[in-house]
Image 1 (spheres, rainbow, N blue to C red):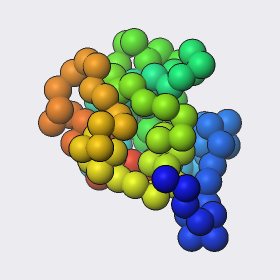
Image 2 (tube, rainbow, N blue to C red; image 1 turned 90 degrees about the horizontal axis):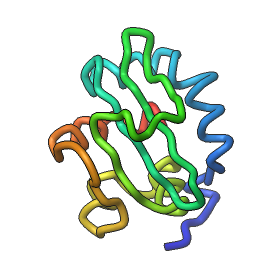
Image 3 (tube, rainbow, N blue to C red; image 1 turned 30 degrees about the horizontal axis):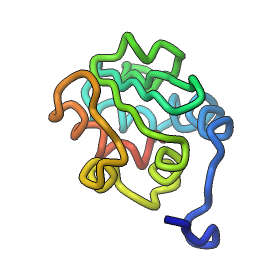
Length: 122
C-alpha cells in the first residue's frame, strides 16, 4: 500500500533510529511508552538486508541497540512494512493480522503490549 506522504510522512530507517535515540526514546513520550509496555520488556525486529535492532523498555525510556536476537519477543518484517508502522499508516495489530509481520520468538501478549506504545516510541 502506498500512502500519501501529505497525511502519513514516511521516515527512513536511519531517521527512525535517530528519532528514537535522540528524541522519543529518552524523552517524555519514550518514558510513557516504556511504562505502558512494562519495564524490562524488549522487542527485536528483523528487517530484510541484515538490518535488525532491539527496542528495550527501561526506567530511562525506550533504548535502542543492535541485539535483536537477545530480545524477549522477536518480529520479522520488511522495511516497507516497518516504515508504515513507524509513520502510523498501519497499526502493529493490523499488520500482524495481514501477515506482514511475523512473530518468530516470544509470546503474542508481549507483542500486544508493544502495539499500543509503538506510536509514541517509534
